[in-house]
Image (cartoon, rainbow, N blue to C red):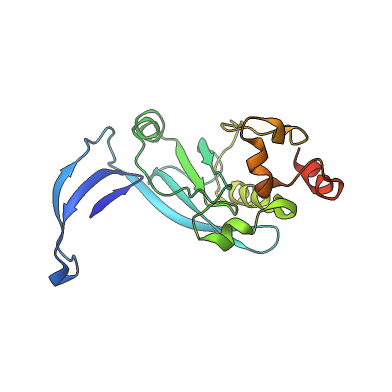
Length: 189
């Protein structure tokens, strides 16, 4: 077995099928790179504009207030059926969580967290759902957002398909050269 999470480094374990892996034994683990004492991971749901429940993880110190004053990093992807699954990040832990910041990971539609239907729910003319999901998580998570960092920007939707791999993304976003599809593509350009 391999065990990991937002607060646990990757750990290789040995378990027995005879007891349904009730007593796994650690064989090897990556080193812990930050102090997890007092940190918690919680899973919550936000309600998107169309009523869909959107799960998200909140990682924080258990003693920080959830009143909108805690500095928070909100992360999400929502594309190409790529899931945002729990994973250990030494940088986030040491530079952010240990210092009292919080991290929210939004499992917005378009991603692969819940299979093909979750991904397909935010394709083309329904792309706005990914943005609405992200907005719902931001509004629900009771944290403080003061800036946006767009790590994988695709902002010029009128010409994106002319980029190196851009033509292969048209199934995700739509074809800006098709007049009918441009009507919805331009709404997120």
